[in-house]
Structure formats: structure tokens, C-alpha cells
Image (cartoon, rainbow, N blue to C red; front, side, top):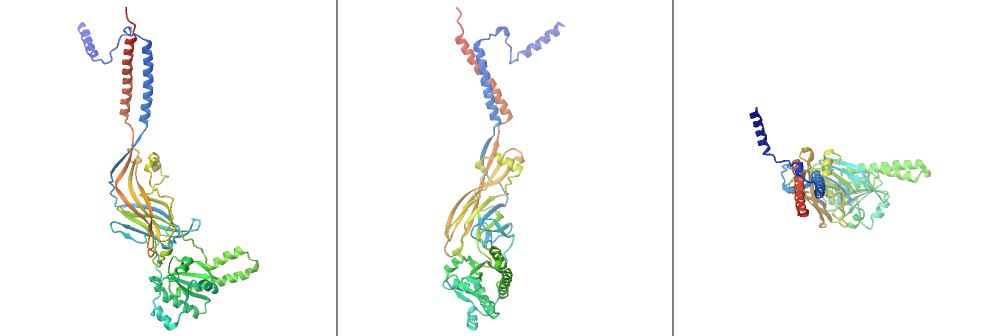
Length: 481
């Protein structure tokens, strides 16, 4: 029995020998006022450090890194919404070119156009994914000069001196404003002469005239001729909008003139029934309705998206048409960039996107820095060119896929480019994708790092203040006699 007891005591004694936290008997300790002060200081220091460490643990940091862009997609989406302030939708063409040799003219896929009024509101939908229809022309056996020799001249040549008087003398007038170098004008010239001849033979009260806009450039500028040929109808000296843009055959042109005359007769009959008591505003509205007069503001909103190759290139809005030659002297490419971005559109209402963007730093949100920017040119033969550097950006706001997104930022420089008088300007957007990408990483402290710091605070404070207390105790301890 005694052996068992002694054996148990021996094991207990062996275990106690590795005790790191040995107890000092209470009778051997001494409480002092200095020790109490140091204890209070220790608790205060620990509390302050604990709060600071906890706040640091709860706070996250943003780390930005640069790395090689590993995106292997062959194409990138380009989103745009641009308002051309002085260009009709019929003449607004979106073209794409890049370093791989891509050269797409008048892109219509995923592109829509709206004709705007003078207040900037959408007025007429000009189509989405719509190809411009080519107008038909008549084929003639004789040239214009041969027609003049055999049949005489029927279309009246107009200039600055007689134009205004002539359109006033003729209640109804149809005028071709052309340029001799324009291929469409050359095709139309014999047809226009045949039109004038047939109108005279049928006794239609319509004057048919033509203006050479090269010789009489000032007159065409006053009439705001933007493209050749411009076929414009006049009623009592007033231009009736929109201009004629259908087939350029004798049959089609004569049919158009007859419809105008019929509508005018109907208006006169209505006006006669109303008598002198008709309201002037109502009468004016009816007159425009019967004349099919719809004043047009030359402003067009072009919007949509393009799938472009991930190589340097450009897209541009150019003034051109399948059926006209543009008048370089009257082409104004002033524009407003309502929106321009790269990649899939950022849906701000999406909960995931909203959560990630809320955490991302402001300096990494340059997704569309050109939005709502005006680029106005005061003179003709000039236009803004934009140079864009695109950088892919990875926003990693957590370890899960739900907290990650990839988007594109870009920087832009714009400058005015001057053109020769014979060249039609274009609003060009040149882009280049950077081979590097920006990674924005949200980083926080690990839980074990936080616990280690807390232990260090407790142990370090206790030990440091214990040493200070022991030192002060020895210094101020009363000396024994």
C-alpha cells in the first residue's frame, strides 16, 4: 500500500517538474501601492491596444497589382451612344477598321439611329439593323448634250441672281442642286432634263430648275445643301421638307410632282370651304399636313454596340451615303458622346455589380470617362479625333466568384484634326488594348494573425510593466538599518 502511494507521489512530482506556471505562495507576496498603479496602467494599455488591434482586424485594405492580361477572347464589345449635332441619319455611317485588315463600311448590325428635333428629343426612328436601299436610275440612249442639241433645254439654269425670284414666280418648283463631279448627279442629269420636258408637255404648273453648286457655292451654302444631288420641292418660294430621296426615274419623279399637286388642290378645296373665318393656326397646320411638310433638324443619335478584334483599330462616324456624294463644304461633325464603354454593359441595378462597385476605389471606376462630353467644331473641314487606351481591370472583392468581376477602364485624349477642302471629315475613335491588366484585390488580416497579436499584446504589456514595476520597487524600497 505504501509503495502505491509513494509511486503516485513520484508521478505527480515528475509531472509538476514541467509546470511553466508555478504558483508563488500568497504568504510570500507583497501588495504595494506602486504595484496597483502599474497594474492599472497595464490594464489601460492592454485595453487601448486591444481596441486598436480589433479595429485593424475589421478594416480591409485595397491592393493594386499589374499583371499580364491573360484574356484569350478574340473580340471585345464596344458600346456607344453618340449624338451627331449637324448630320442627318441618312448620311451617318458607322465604319470599323483594325490592324488585322478588317474594314467594315456602314455597319448596321446592332446599330440603331434616331432623328432628333431641335430640343434633342427623339422624333423619328431611322432604323435598326437596316441597310440603306439603293435608288434606281433610268438608262438613256442620249447624253445630256445630245438631248440639248435635238430637243432644246427644258430645265432652267439657276444662280444667285435669279434663284429667289424664280422660286417665287413658280407656285410649285422642283430644283436639282448638283455638282458636276458627282457620279449620281451625272446619272440623274438626262433624267432631270426628261422630267422638265414631260412636265412642260403635260402642262403641269411646276417649274423644274437646277443649280450647279460648284459654280454657285454660296447659293448652295445658303440653302444648306449637305449632299449631291439634293432634290428639293418649293412652294411659293418656301422649301418643303424633307427633300426627295426616292427613285430617280422619270416615272417616279413625275409621280411625286403629281402627288404634290393633288395635295395642294385638296388643301385649296378645304380652305375654300372654311372661308375667311378659319383660324390662322389651324389653317397653317392643315397647310403643312397637305403639303406633307415636316421640318427636319439635322441631328442624329447613333447607338448600339460593335464586336471588334482585340487589336489596335478605330471606329468612326462618317458623313457618306450609298446614293449621294457629300458636300465637304457643309459637313459638320460636331458631336456629343452620351456613352462609350468597353466590355459587357455594367448593370448598376444588378446586386452583385452594385456590391462590388460599392467596395471598389473611385480611382478604379473609369469605365466611361467620356460620357456626356461635347466635342464641338466651329468651322468646316475639321473634326475631333479621340485616342483611347483600354486596360482590363479585375475587381476581386473576395475569394468567391460572387465577389469578382472583370471590366475595362480607359484613358482618352481628344484633339481637332483639320481636313483638306475636298475631303469629308469624320469623328474617329481610335482604340488600343493594353497587354497589361490591373488587379484590384481586397485584403484583410487572417484570424490567426489577429489572435497572435492579442497574445503578444497581453504578454508583452504584462512583462514590460512588470519589469518597470520591479525596477521602481527596488529604487524606492526603504533601506534597512
